[in-house]
Length: 248
Image 1 (cartoon, rainbow, N blue to C red):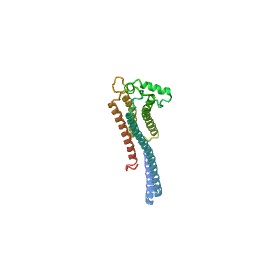
Image 2: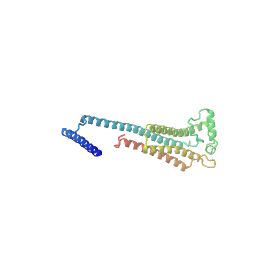
Image 3: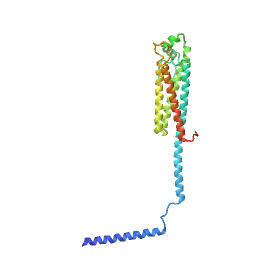
Image 4: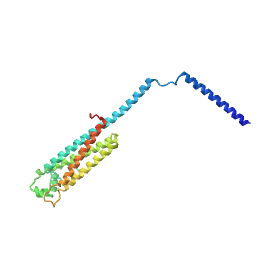
């Protein structure tokens, strides 16, 4: 009995509360829709949002432009080293350095150092079979030509490697571009090994004509052209992403 009375009272209060809420909602509806933000405020907010998006896009494009410029310079350096390599071949300087020494950057400076390098060269067939009368003064130009060729390649590797690390650090290289640049850098390292593999073919003592293998020479040149084309293609692809109309 008491429980039935309690439930009746609860239902009565519930209906009263809902009736009051209905009256409040009806009065608000008669007065019109709820107040909204002024149109000027909405336009200002939209403009600020668009400006923020444009600023982010501009910063991204600026970074990509720098990446493209770095790649273009790298491609130019690769083209330059191809020309230096051709000059080394034409002057028959490629076998003057009989050791690889990839971490040695300075050429011989003192007379003692020059004599040591010349003595090493005299142990190989190019001297004993082709140039037995060569003097130290005649040896220096061909040695320096090959030294310039090798150190040009090392300089290119340092330039590309440091640029790659810098642009990765600032977030300019990512995604597919990251993988492509890593592949090109790896090809550059392989190219150095191919160069020494080519030189070794001309240092063998059991050959009649102390010249590098033409097949290894062709491999060395072909890989250089592949690297050049890959870097140039990547650079142009970066500029195309910045401006598809082609205005660099």
